[in-house]
View (cartoon, rainbow, N blue to C red):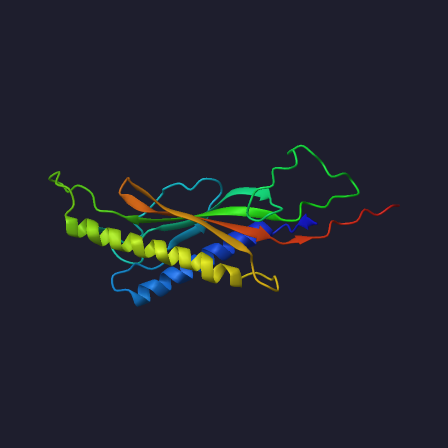
Length: 202
C-alpha cells in the first residue's frame, strides 16, 4: 500500500479544525476564556512565535488573544501503532514490483497554542499574583480543551469507516518568553493508504 498524496495535509487540517472549534466552544462556556485565535494556521517545520497578542478576541492586556498552529514533527513507519518501526533499515527498498509500504504509516503532529502573559510594567514591577493567576487559569483550561479536542473530535474526522486512529501524546507548557506563554500538544495519526499505480507495458 502507498500513501495517499493528501493524507498528511488532511490529518493536519483536521487537527487544526477540531482544536479551533473546541476553543470557540470553551469561550462560550467559561467566563473570561478566550476563543480560537484569529491567527490559526498550518505551518511548515518548526513554529515561529510570531504573535501572541492577537487583538481579534480581546485585548493583550487581558492576557488573551493568541496564536494557534499545527506542524508536522515526523512521518514514519509503524507496524505496531504508534510505535515507530525500527526492524527495517531506512535504506532498505521494497523493489519495483512490491511497492507496498509497511502495514501502517503515521504522522506526528504538534499543536502549539500561545497566549499573552503579563510582564513587568513601566516601573519595573512584576505582575501581580492576581494577573498571573488569571493567565494560569486560561492556560490550564486551554490545555484541557486542546487535549479533549484531539481525543474526542479528531477520531470522528476523515473518510475511514471506523474513524481516524489516533494516539494522544504529552501536553506540556511552553514559555513564558517574549510576553508569550502557552502549550504544546503532540498527537499521532495513522494514515490511510492506497494501492500503488500499476505500470503499463507498451
